[in-house]
Structures are given as C-alpha cells and as structure tokens.
Image (cartoon, rainbow, N blue to C red; front, top):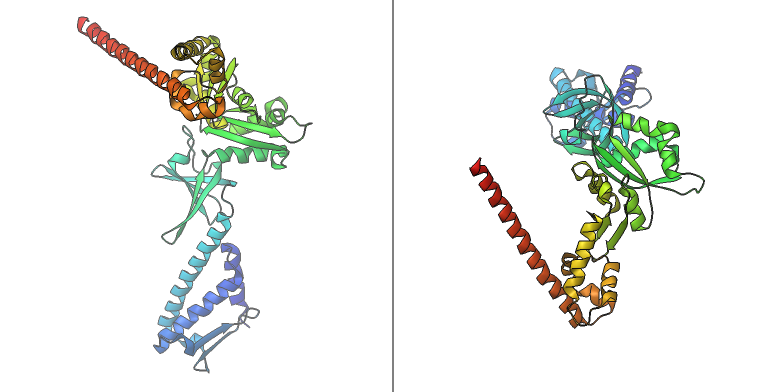
Length: 405
C-alpha cells in the first residue's frame, strides 16, 4: 500500500484545483520519462507505468518484464521530478484559464498587491493574481497593499505559458454588475438596465425599465432615502450616477437623458441620426454640462448625435433655411414645415441630407429636390466664407491689440 502517494496527489489536486486523474497521469508520464532516461531508449511503447488510483501502488514494465521504478537511480529521479513539475504547472495554468474564462464580465473581490509600471497587481486568491492596467483604473484612485478591492474580470489571456487575468474598474459593465448586486430587482430581471454610458471617475448615466407596473424602476435603483445608489457611489469613490427612465420614444428618452436640464423642443432627423434639442438660456449650461459631459453622455446613452441650441439659435437657423429656399417658385410654407418635421432645421442639414430623403419622404419631384439642395449648398458656402472672414478679422484685431500693448 502506498497511501502516502495518494494523500500527496489529493493535496495537490485540492490546493491547485487540478483534476486528480490528471495528476496521476502526469506521474505515470514522468516515471516513463525517468525509465527511458535510465535505459537510454527513445521508444515509448516498450515502457509502461501504472499507478493504482486507490492504493497508490506503482507497477512498471519494460518489454513486458516488470521493473522496480524505485531503483532507477538519482539522475532518472531528477528527470521525473522536472517532468512532473512542468506538467503540474501546465495543468494548473489550464485549470486557472478554464475557471476564469467562464467568469469574464463578472465582478470579483480581491486584495490590492503591488504596482508594476502603473499596473496594479490584485491577489484574487492564494494562487491567482490579476492585473489592472492603468487605463482600467479609475482616475484619482490609489490602492494600498492589503486593501480590499472590487473589480470586474475584463479578459483572460494565455501569453508565454502564463495566464493573464485583466481586471477593470472603468468598464461600464462594472457598474452594471454593481447594480445587480445592490438592486435585487435588477438581478431578478424585473428591472432591466437598457443602456449605460460612463466616463469613469466622473459621471455615469443609466437608463432603466421596469417590466412590473407595480415597481418604479428609478425608485428601486435609488433605494429608500438613496441607500442603494449611495452604496454604489461609495464603491466608485463618489462618481456621480444619473438614473433615467427608459422610453421607446426617442424624443422622450433624449429629454430624460439630458436631465437635470429641462428641454423645450426636440427635432429628430433620422437620416442624419441627429437630434436638435432646444433649451432655454437658463438651461443651456445644465444641458451641456461641465466640459460638455452631460450632452456627451446623453448622446452615448441614447445613440443619437445631440445638438443643443437656444430658442434664438434655433429660430435663426429655421429663418435662414426658409429664406434660402423661399425664392424657389414651387416652395411654400407647408414645404418648410415638412422639412422641419423631418428634423431638417438648417441649410447645413439640408445639404447633408441630400435629395434622396426629400423625394422619398416628401414625395416631390427629383428636379425640385435638386433645386432645394443646391440652394442650401450655395447658402452654406456663403456662411462658411463669412465665418472664415470673421475669424481672420478677430485674429488680426487680437494681433493689433498685442502690438499696442
């Protein structure tokens, strides 16, 4: 009986999460290599080693003649040891890869280790480390050795006989997983996060929808007195999170996404994938946000390019458009209204859309569509030239001011 060998195999299998049968096979292969080294043969078929899985008894044959594997000497034993180490390391890599590749996109808890060239090494378990590149770390956060850290498994790669587990705290799905943990209705599928846009460390917008009329999607995500959202914000070191109600209506969704700003009017141009949003002068800075962050996140959340205009800018563009094409004999006020209904609110929009949508959507003759688009293009050229002239004059005036000083 060789129960000591069985106990060793069981311990290795448990500690390294390797299949027990794989270790026995590795041992048998290592002993075959040792015997080949001893007998100086390259033919694998003439040597056979079998280990009884229950008792640990080793039986070895060469050319159908039993041999004592323990009497092969020091050098073959060293060969067996090296082969065994290599095979167990390979099995361990395979075990780690198969375990963590299934967990891609999952949030895990780890312990911050050391920084290597800006990347943070995170201890996921006593045998596995993950790497969080600088690009996947939240700006401004610093983690100290031994600190508990939550992150998402972004990718699992095999590189140069190593398994690299890439971690992230900046990926949008990291927040999605946090909501699944903090908001039971999300994990149960009662509430769905329909869309999410994030600028890590600064602000996130998420659009949520409830499949149960009795459950308020926004209220459930916020929690009683903000308890649920506060836990998520604390985990993200104070990152702002805007929760908005999802709508299948693009206009409603865009208006919700631009909160806290109040929207006066929205014109959607499906041909350009663009939404022109009109807000009051007092709402302009709120709609745009600091460094354009609010409108940028709203655009990503909704999937629309969003232009923010004041009523004065909107009316000016419409008047310019109407004046430009009104000189064409077949054009009347109804035609202009139809253009506005298509979300075409400026000569630049009209030039970019082209004749196709006008013929298809407004059912006009192609000749008229060409006249309208050419008129818009000509006006757009004049506007561009005027803008360029004003910029040149402004630069010239600044230069004169500096020389006088």
